[in-house]
Image (tube, rainbow, N blue to C red; front, side, top):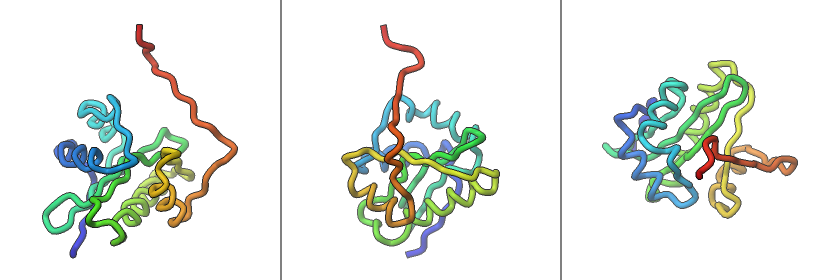
Length: 143
């Protein structure tokens, strides 16, 4: 099986969204709709990636930065292709891309209940930060 990795474009959106929806542990929201992903890709050119194998989408990842820190979101590999190094390759390429734009640290968000995802990230050298908790708030509160 030959795997090719390339930058994600908005033309990949439908296939990537289908992969994310099929992947346990990936949480989607309005921030993952086409216009928001298109804006994200434009703000972070070349950092988000897709992997193809045998003519189909094998994996995808969103990667970007805020000028100080990098962020990886929604790394997913098709269930029948896991364990072949595709996720590792996508993660490594994200780190290379961030280093190329002079970003020295990257963060990921993994749901507490996503033990498979946590295991993947730990296996490739990521560490849990027990000194932080994530807080969120909508910019435009409902009501």
